[in-house]
Amino acid sequence: MPNVVSNTTPIISLLKLNRLELLQQLYQEIYIPLAVYNEIEAGKVKGYYQDLVEVDWINICRVRDDQAVKYFLDLDAGESEAIILATEMNADLIILDETLGRFHAEHADLKVTGTIGVLIKAKAKGLIGQLSHY
Image (cartoon, rainbow, N blue to C red):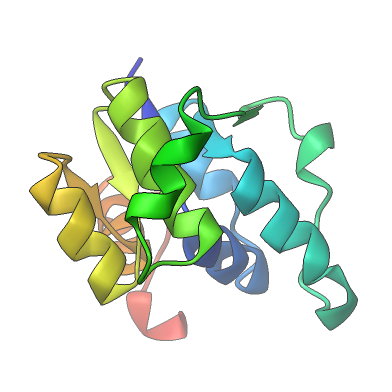
C-alpha cells in the first residue's frame, strides 16, 4: 500500500465533486498533516464539508519537525506541513495543486500529482466515466 500525503485543495476539490472516495479507491488510505485538517475545518462554513476525523482511511498526523515550517515562508501552513510530512514518512506520492507548493515538493524529491492527476488516474481505472463532467 503506497504512502500518500494530500494537501487541502485536492480534498476540498473532491468534496465539491462529491468524489472524496476516489482517494480511497486509488490509494486505500491517505495521510494529511494537522494543518490541512485545520484548514478544512476552518472552511466548513462554506459547505463542501466532511469531518475527516470520521473517515477511517484518512490519517491525520502531526509532523515531527514542526520547526521546519518556518523554512517555507512562501507557502501556507497546510502546504508546508504536507511537504514536511511527505518527506518525514518517505511518501510515495504527494497530492498538491498549487504551483509553488509543487515546486518545493519536487525540489524535495517527492513524486507529485494534483487533483487533475487523481481524476485522470480514476478515469483510467474505470472509477469515473467522463472527465468533462468534472
